[in-house]
Image (cartoon, rainbow, N blue to C red; front, side):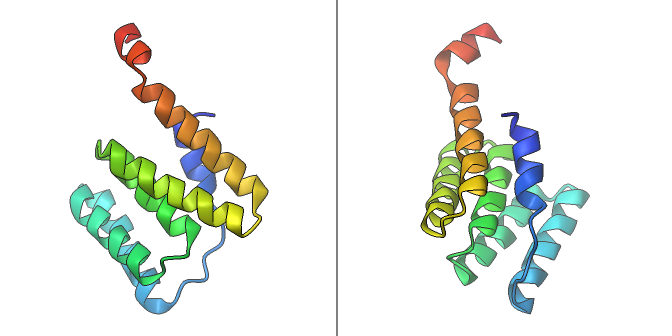
Length: 116
């Protein structure tokens, strides 16, 4: 699965966040659009801390980490999102997260670096 399409699919699911979390997510989107990706990352991390059991937030944070080349942090966040999806028995979205993690792993594999 392509990394960008998996990220879009995860972002498309419905939100029912409390105001405090929704504000941070919206601020993160605005910051990212303005080019302030690092501040967007901090805002998403805060949102994850406020709603620690929301797999969508963890997935969004993981993708933002990936874009900022924070590969280990991205894997950790996406594994957390996957665990939460599996715990909730959300197999369709868990499958997307597994595909996203596999795509990330293959992108980081030494063979793919040499081939590029």
